[in-house]
Amino acid sequence: MDFTRVPTSAHRRRRQSAHSGLFESVSNAEQAIREVRESGRIQIRLSQSGENVVATVQDDGVGSPRSDAQTFFDPFYTTKRPGGGTGLGLSICLSLIREHGGTIQADSLPGGGSASASICPSQ
Ligand SMILES: Nc1ncnc2c1ncn2[C@@H]1O[C@H](COP(=O)(O)OP(=O)(O)OP(=O)(O)O)[C@@H](O)[C@H]1O
Ligand SMILES: [Mg+2]
Image (spheres, helix red, strand yellow):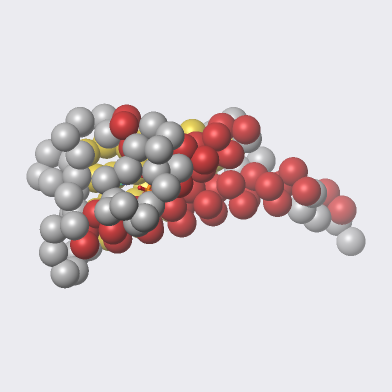
């Protein structure tokens, strides 16, 4: 058995934080579409960029008034109806991913909608 390939708890934590960033982004994308219409398009792309795994989620939902969409990450910032969201989803995921040397970025798209990228080291 090749013990170098057995996931350590650090590997597992890194993978879980990358998963939580992707899950949160998809969940937000779905909610952003529902803000404006019944159905829409969510595109998910997974790629490797140097030593990082990059998960990009793009939607054609409500978008953001700020082009860099930086407010999405402010703790307790939410546009959900009262009781609909904590406003902590992205800020928690960002902290988790940063612990592993990664980050999450978000942008509003010129044609409407938003895109986010969860970037996490693969090793
Ligand atoms: N894809 C997106 N399109 C438009 N707005 C978004 C998108 N993702 C996040 N946001 C904005 O950022 C806010 C904060 O997102 P975050 O995930 O931190 O909390 P939340 O989704 O409001 O609550 P929770 O995650 O607890 O359900 C959202 O309420 C929304 O206004
Ligand atoms: Mg959320």
